Image (tube, rainbow, N blue to C red):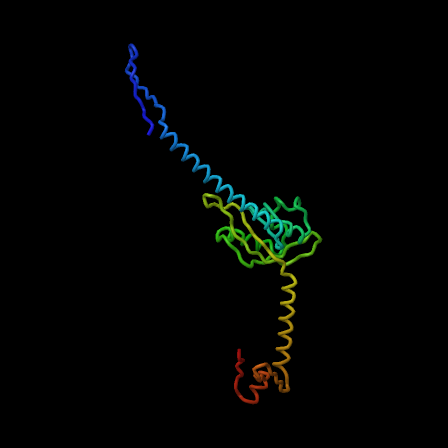
Length: 223
């Protein structure tokens, strides 16, 4: 413990003045201070190393990730995009950073973004949210977003972190399958002749209307 000496001085025609003078610390006290300082430096170095590892990992993910990455500020303006994002949509970085995400959406999707972005910030996460984005060549692609909110040390909103994948072809195939399924279902249901289908379980299916007219009961599909 540091010792403090107290001295009193009397000044003529004045009140007594007290002055505290700090004695020099002992060798043991200096050694304790040095040990505390060394411990603090080691802790700071450890934190610094961990942060550097995180930065290295993020940089690798940011630059090499096959999925598009974007970060928006609280107003929905671009803070960052990665190379995959730029390659997919055909823009340069200068054409994107600082612009509103809504400016790159199909006009029919802009209100959807304005309505749901505040919800994203409030909830802190989105999964599978779809948007139709404009490419530089004038075409549009459908993308699916997953994202989280980044916060500062006080827990306030800092920025968004989102990745997306192009699901345009996937949606086209899905729609084609739906139309094909509906076409065959209509053919099956409206057939005037019996149709027998066997699968690996040897389950017999009849057209619904024909089955009803013959057996006067309803066919319940087996799943």
